[in-house]
Structure formats: structure tokens, C-alpha cells
Length: 529
Image (cartoon, rainbow, N blue to C red):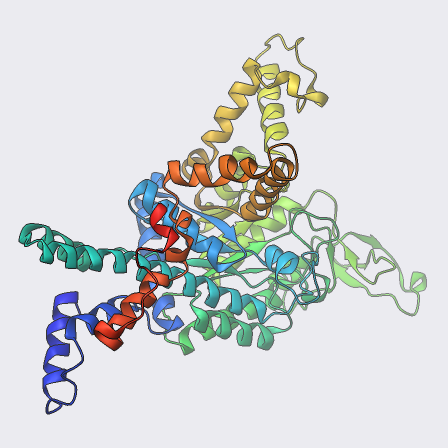
């Protein structure tokens, strides 16, 4: 229902109470309703899932329509990202938020900073989703509140044209509420545990769940060693659990992002159960590193499988984990991705050890032989040394072309002495176009940076601490922070407004009329801005 329709409907409702509600202003109530468009997390999940589905179709039509997001670990951070996007680009179209399990573990656990090993409280993940949407909804309320004040000013000035323009803007208002791709790790347990957590995340507003094929109790960060995968049937049960959660809650467009860590995972905790030759279990086991044995070779605790009519003993480590054949990572990735898409996943995530378009494309090309519209979510991870990786890629390409590289030392390309070189400029251009190139060549529908604000917070804090506690003193804050906020039009320079002071004043006036004691008077120092 539109703003004007809400106003008219509420006016009729007020009239229907025999004068007892006459002190209620219909337009004020309509404004409050507009500022609280999403009543529940499920309203958000349904709305944002539809956005993602439309964006996926737009990408299929033209890979230039790829989407992006930045990871966040606090509602305020997510809110400020979307405010900045609206300020600079006028629209939040194809811009999402990413909720990183790594950042929840490192920054939101009651245990203190933890590694990305699913040791943090799983309830903190849906809690952060709810927090993010609380802040995004507050950004809507703040911006609409400013528009309502402008409407009142236009009316007071008798400017009907300006009033209509503002009312139309309210009717066509674009919310800060955008899709969140939320990290459910490996499900924090079995399929039932995955289902229960998925429900909590969806109820909080998540329209997209990213789940990985690692063992829950052996979970590792995708860019660290020691990763252990599970057989496909175990993983598919968790994908189905997520789908059931979406369907139970009425979010039929819900998105499941299936992540494979097989490229860097050389271990499995289980030998897959196989019913018939060539089934998924048999395909999984085919990658096990085995040695041929006879019955006389076996120890009491040995596990054996039959392969090509031979008795084979999988290599087992002291940790009781089984080892895959070296060099099988890519083949396992392709099998993981095809299988996931054929059994209910919507998008893929391939965790790689470096950002290399052709490496990603080589796997996607094979996946698309089986599933032609396969699409990826790709982690533009701060775990990669982007500068070094792309300088080495340019070096290798130039070397293959036979160019003179005597001015460069490949092992030392990170050195600042190369920062102004032709090679560095070429590498930076490849970094700049990486997302567009990956979208076009490698099927990457969504590009995200998992941990950007973890690093920006550390960097900005270091700069402020150096200046404020050093010779700059208060100028370190004023010149390094506040003056830049003013010059760049950062909304938070008026931090009272951002925290909701003006919204509160509006409510006081709705509730108490002329008797309202408001904070935004002439003595409010926010007026200095």
C-alpha cells in the first residue's frame, strides 16, 4: 500500500472510533508505517530472495550484471555501507551484504577472538543478521524522516510543486534493506542441527545461506591447511535441510550457496557408502589414495575397499583421517559443484588459493558442460596478497611473450621499488577489472570481500592513534576524521541524527504535540554541521 493510500486508510480507521482516536494524526501514523515497512525477518527474507532471483536472471542474460557485497560484523557497519552506496550511486541495485563466519568468530564470540573453526556460538550468526537488518531499517526511518520534514517545510512555504515532488519520492522510495548472503559454515553439526540453525537465520531475514562441504567438527578457514571434506550424500542432506527450512517458513525463493573446499582439502573423515558401482559414493572413494593389499597384509583396524576387482587399503593418518590422491582437487571440485547443483543448490562457491580468472574459468567450463547456467559466488579474499599475485601473473604472461624482464625479480615483486613500474601498473589494471573479467569469463555472478571492515577498522585506528597520541594531538582527529566527514558528506558527522535523535523528536511531537520536549532545538550542537 502506498504512502498516500496508507494515509487515507488510516484516516478512515481513526474516524471509525467515535471520536476517541481524534488525537491521532493519520499522516503521522502513515509515516511511522512507511518507516517500518518490514514487520518481520521473514518479510525481509521473502523480499530480498526475490531480488536475488531477479538479479540471477539478469546475470544469465548479460554477465555485465554481476553483483557485489562487502562483509560486515556489526549492524552499524552494514548500515553505513548501504548509506554510502545510495549516496555515491543513487541505488542499491545489485549491491548486497555478506555475513562472514570468520568475522563472527573473530569479533562476536563470548569466548573472545577465535579462529574460523566453528567454535563460536552458532546463535551469534542469526543474531547478527537481525542486528544488520535493524540498522538497515533504521537507515530507512532516518532518511524518510528527513524527507517528511522537507514535506512539512514545503507545505509551510506553500510550495505545492515541491510537496508533490517529495510525496512522489516517498512513494518510490528505495530501501536500504538488501540481500544478505549468510555463512552457516558447515552447518554446526548434523543435518538436523543445520536445519534448526537455517530456520533461525531465515527468521532473522537471511534469504541466502552459504554452506560448505567440510566436516563440522574439523572445520577450518578455507584459506588454511587441514581441511577435511565429507562424502556427497552427507553434504546433500544438509543442502536439503536448508531447502526444507526455506519452504517451511514460506521463503520459496530462498537461495542456497554450495561451497566446495575440495581444491585445498586433501583429507576425508569418512569413506563414502556405495550401493552400486559408479554411484556418488563410489565416485568419491575413487579419489582415495590407496595401496593394493591381500588379506594377509591387513591389521586388525584396517579399512579396505574393492576397486577394479582388487582389495585396496586407503591411506589413513594417525588422526584417523583418510587421504586423497595428490592432484585430484580440481576433479573433486567439479564433481562437488555438479552434484550440488543437480540436487538443489542455486549457486556455487569454489574456494581457491589465489585470485586467477583462468583457473576459476577452467573449472567452471567443465561444470557448465553438465549444468550450463552454473553461477558462482567468489570470495575476493583479503587472505590473498593481491598485489603479489597479480604482479606475478603479469610477469609470467610477459615471460611467455618473450619480453625482457631483466628489470624485475619475480620472487621480490612485492617490493615497493616496483610500485611505479610498468609491470605494477599492468597488474593493478588486472586487479581493477578482475570482477568484470571474472563475471564474463568465469561465471562469477556475485563478488564479495569477506573481511574488508576488519582491515579498514585496523588501518583507520592505526592512523588515528599515531596522529592523536603523537604530535598532532586533537588535530589528528579533526583533520584525519571530522573535517573529512564534513567535506565528503558523511552522514555520521551528525551522529545524534544517525543514532535516531530526530526520529525520537518526531515521535514526541506525534505523541505529545506542543508539549513535546525535543532535543533538536537551537542549542543542539549538531546545528554546527
